[in-house]
Length: 226
Length: 226
DNA sequence: TGTTTCTTTACATCTTTTTTACACTCTTTT
DNA sequence: AAAAGAGTGTAAAAAAGATGTAAAGAAACA
Image (cartoon, rainbow over all chains, first blue to last red; front, side, top):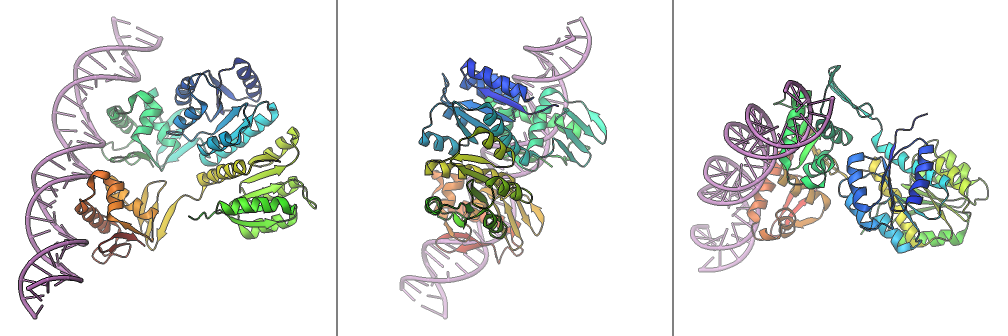
């Protein structure tokens, strides 16, 4: 049995990380770990987790700040871990976009159950990991792209851009979102990267790159995959 | 302020129902109550709630059974209330489709926060903020505008103006408000911008731009979307 | 070393926004 | 009732800005 959900653990205490890792690996999740807030933010961008488990007691950034920064560009489910059972804190975090809140000590079975609930929610919006429209097919699991049954080879960056569009197909994805997700927080105002890669993608997946039917630009906003 | 989410409370204890009702009504939710499991199932079908708060200690049916029967036909979020903090029970219920689990006694603020989280999840899958009136349809999530089923392409500024009107549809939005929201605080007295963009919008979304039926001018005040 | 990919640079092209100009419709004033 | 003025509608230009494209240099990889 394989479970292809990726989970990011953000916690500075090694003992807790060990406990979480053991339980989650045992349940066949793919794990990535970060030991500080900044590290968590970076890994969230590079690892593309389906769920984040975030401990509040971090050394550099407040867990609350990490959550706020995450919510600027992603809606990935976040489960908060904490020792404090303080109600105002809970409310603040839940309203800031957290999906669940667990007070230590917690039973591992309950954690796993709440992980399943969070992933179930995500499943509702994500549905199928295969996107198909016209002659274009993108398999996010296998990392494969086809145009009219013929496989197309994409570079890493090209694929990152495309997969970001696929994940929100139909909707406009803003330039800021794309840049942040693919090149990281540094490249906020370097939209020319984007133009170049959108251009290369179009050359590879559009029948007529100058009259795109899949990757539509929304001037002043971003791009949209249809 | 109005909050149009409907919440069904299923609980046999009147005191708890009173407490929940008070807090939820105060937060402007629409409430429906059931005092037994069977009653709850019936009301869930007739009332079409956006969220169900289900107490486990029911006289006729086990709360667990109610949840299982609900899940046969609906995915409406369910928050479980209980006195028992028993982990296996939690896991069983969460895996049976419950979305959250609160142990009594709980703070009212936390309950409300978890209600908001559950409704937020629901918002992800459906209930997208779509404005529809006559032949005009505006999807604020996808940033799409349709006139008689045909998609209309709007520039960024045009869309900003329209979405501002949509958000307060029915009401008059003053020129000052529109200018401030779209062009920023600088452009307070440059109402000609507005006239030009209202004009362009009408050309795009009105059947007869000179006799607008959607974007109505309120002379001396501002504009109104109907 | 050769190949691939990523980044940088440069410029052409297109769209959108702003500016400018004028016509229209009311209401108020004479 | 005609004239004036304020607010509004419309059409076109000029200006600004965003996007598309090609190609060369730098970095990574084998």
